[in-house]
Length: 481
Image (cartoon, rainbow, N blue to C red; front, side):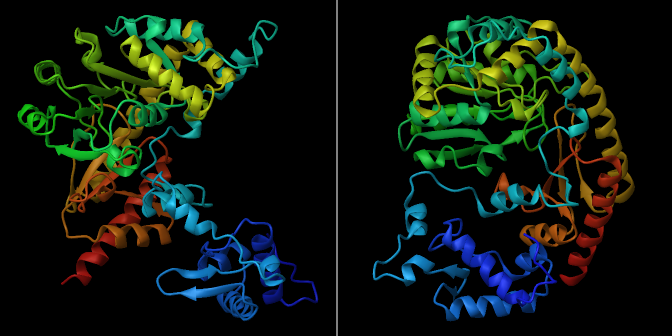
C-alpha cells in the first residue's frame, strides 16, 4: 500500500484505516500479531512516530493491545465491537494445530528471501540465471496438446514420466519398474508422506548430525524423535548404528550421501557398503535423499545405496528441484511396491496428484535429453561459482574461518573461528541486507557455523556479502573482549 500524501486525511489516520481494513477482511484475525512498528514504517514509507500514533489510536478503539513479549496483538474486530458476541480466536486454533509451525528463524528466512535488495547467501536453489526458461518454452510449444490431459493422473503419477525415471535411474545402477515409483511434489512431500504413512509415533529417526531435517518440522509434527549420528570425511559414521537400533527397535535411518546438506560432504563408496551391511543385519530401513546427485563438480559420485539394495531396505528420493527447476515441484520415491502403493494412497488423500503439466514438462526434459544437457551446463556454472566463492574466502576469511572444498552441491560449511552469537549475527547481517543460514538450524551445537551457498547470489553479491560478514564478525569479536 502507498499512502496518499496529498490527501487531507492525516497519515496516521490512513495507517489506522489500513490496519482496520486488514482486520475487517480477516487478513489479520483476532490473536494475530501486527508487524513490528519499524517494519510497518518501512513498508508504508512513513516515520515510526506515525505508526506509533496509529497504534495508539487502534488501541484506544479497542482493536489492538500491546502484549509483553508478543508485540501488538489484534484483540477485536470492527464487527465484534458492534455485537455482544466474542469474535473467534483464530490464533488459539492455530496454536492448537497438530502440524508444528516452522522454526521462527526459518519463517524469517522464508520471508526475507523476497525483500528488495537482499543478498541470499544461504539459499539452496539455482540462480534464476541458471534456470532453463528458454528450453522449457520450446518444450511447451512442442507438446501435443491434443493428446495431453489437463485432468488428474493415476495415483502414482504420469506413467510415461515414471517410465522415463526408471530409464534415467538405471543409468546409475537402480533397477526398478514404473509400478515401484511414486511421483511427488518434491522430496519434502515424500518425507511428509513417509512420516505419516510408515512411521509410528515415537519412532526414532537416525540421521547425520548436522542435518537438513533439523531445520524442518516434518517428522517432529508426527511425533518422531531424532538421534544424530556423527560424521567424518567419508560421511555418516556407522559404528554406533547397530547398538542404537537394539535399544530403539522402532527406528529408521535418513541420509543425504551425495553433497550433504549442510556440510557438502560426499559419502565414500566404502562407507555406503558398510551402511548397507549394517542396515541388512539390523533390519533398519533407510531413506536415501539423493536430490543433489547431478550436481557433482569433478567426477560423478559413487552409486546410490539403492543400486546395491538387494533386500528392499532403501526408499530412494530423487528430485528435479535442485538441478532443473524448484518451481516444477517434481520429485519421486522409489521403493518396494507395497510401500509405494501405501504412499500413493496417502498422496491421493493429500492433494490428488502432482501437477499434470509439470509432470509432462519433466517427462519431456528426460525423454529428449534436454535434462542431461542442462545439468552438464549447470555443473560447469556451479563450479565457476564455487571457485569464485572459495577465492573470496581465501582473500577475506583466511584469518577468521575454516572450511572444506565441496566436490558438488550448493554449500560450503563455514566454521567461524572467533566466538559469535548466531542469532545476533543473523539479525545484524539481515539489517545490512545479507541473508544467512546459521548452523544452529541444522544442529543446536553448530553455533560457530554458517551454511554458505554459491548457487544463487551473483559474483558481486557474494563479494559484498563476505565483506559485510567479515566486518560484522570483527565488530562482534571486539565487543566480546
